[in-house]
Image 1 (cartoon, rainbow, N blue to C red):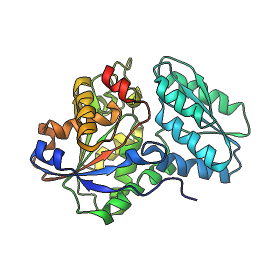
Image 2 (cartoon, helix red, strand yellow):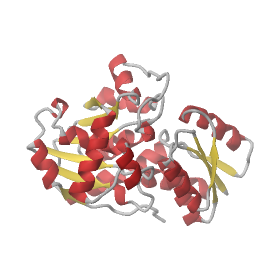
Image 3 (cartoon, one colour):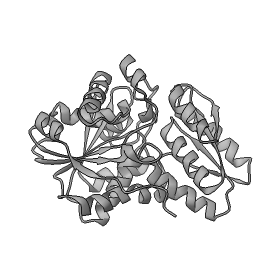
Image 4 (cartoon, one colour):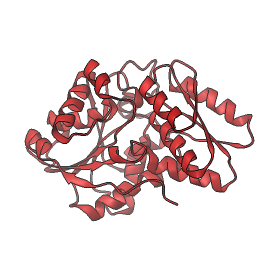
Length: 303
């Protein structure tokens, strides 16, 4: 059983004109669970269900928990999503509508994660579902590259958002198995959620003191170790932009493509809309439009 759908790869005329390049969009925002997370988390949940789990416990800023809740609903199981206080009401409401329980705990994802781990350890029927750090999950996320390799031309650069690094690890995993190892990746973050950029610059895992960006879905205080390791044998560049750039890109993308995405996704789009120097000489770009459920038209207008 596959919980995710194949998403289209389309050419974006507005982004191509803005950047002076050929830009293609992998539209993960239209996944049934609202983001790319369903690919990997769906695969992980299916695996844990086969092992006998009756309940999933998922720490999340919103999107991972929604994907776990969607998977639980499809598999006829239960889900408890532990979210920090920074999680939007839109995300919490979306999760509860799927029949999952929402537990609010902690000032950030790390504190929510500690609570989720304790809950899972005390419940023999439960499976802990990490939102970004699991090889089974990365294999699932990599299916978007399996699709893209058959849908359009090979890009000169892939642009994506990075928080904890689950999407990055999954995309690189998919690139390696499709002969795209030579294609560089631009990993985009916002100021205040830039744990990967800081880790990449330091050559070691760096933990942020706090998350201060509106792009709360990027809000891991430290990236997965494997995300940094991938940078050792793959060309991975970093771009860190402002919250205002991310929000402006979300508004432009809504006007240009009638698709609403979170600022966490918007920062990857901003790199192309603003034609940042980190794009270097790439003529053909693929942007992973990762999506996100923690947004509404009214919330975007207020940012």
